Length: 130
Image 1 (cartoon, rainbow, N blue to C red):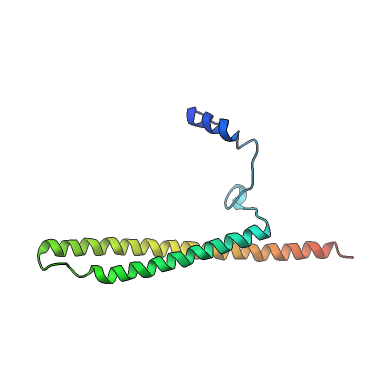
Image 2 (cartoon, one colour; image 1 turned 45 degrees about the vertical axis):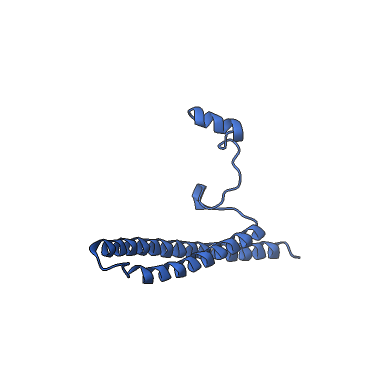
């Protein structure tokens, strides 16, 4: 049941999502997802492209980190600026590393699902061969 004006507006646009469930991608009931083999290959490719972009961003962040330790002047304000900048860039690098690891782990799970799907499909096709 959807409650409130926002919920009523969403229901008017999309209907009651609980009455007509669609495809589930990642998560959902029983932590499952459903995709066609072609969709799964495409999704894996998209995630691999994303990992490449995250890695490239990480390289740029590392270059910034190397530069951020140099203060623009010798006064305390310049030193504080360099320190604050360095802390921010290190936090950005930590976040970038976290995103890369998450994406790599997700690709691993998708590939495991893909290999299980291929084995299951092969087993099922063998069942129907005479």
